[in-house]
Length: 324
Image 1 (tube, rainbow, N blue to C red):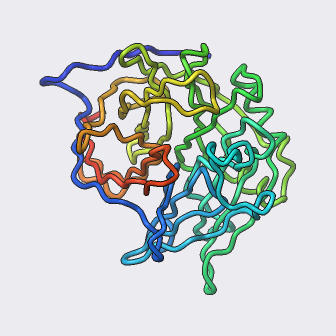
Image 2 (image 1 turned 135 degrees about the horizontal axis):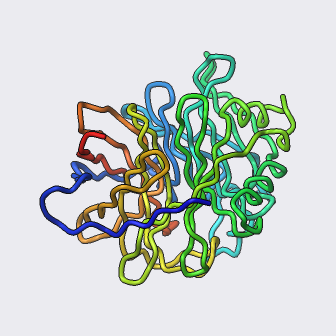
């Protein structure tokens, strides 16, 4: 796979990416319970659909309201999972949230991370007159093809992000430099993914192409790894990344820094740290574009705090970009 290495750029003039955090809020459901482990976000109806990687349901965030949307049935009678409870291995680990369509109607595609059979499912959420409609499907054969394209054993998969470029999804695997695994991605047809979830095509027949490696550098000896991606109108891609000190694709570890990277034609051309807010490093795991005004991209970013007792944060950020 082709690769490109870029170091974090120092503070100063001439930076091709500059990041401003305008606002930080907490996510809670209407009954006051926290939205935890926010792992992906995409537009949905008049709001945003936020996946939780430690639960079977998502959060539908609308003006003045946050309600739960069931994505998958309970696992062994459980809807929430944690390491403390000894149930982390059961979670579906829904990490990717991407805009999609079903028969030209707006929908959202949600995908598991892939490191175990429980995490190889896809979900389609569509808004109907009666509220959200959800369908799920087993994509294990497709995940195995992605692992082969990336040259990875299946249990090393950690597919955490996806950017939609017209009819194509670039699906990003979060690497782990400590384990010798760089971040990487493949290209998959969007409608192929949707059709596989709906059972219209066999998942093994969905094409997987154009494998790339993406090396983002490191912070304090910990490699930055991709946690999500979002496409820009000009064809470039913004990535979120975290330097998390963990030995594998499953265990959590201390996060020493987070960053936004700019990808152009598959090449990493800039990496910029996300400013700490309130003295905390926010592990951004989901990105969505709110608006683009000239060279200023307004993002909604959701944070996985790796703490099941605390609500996830939502950052409203602006990313200032040099022209392509």
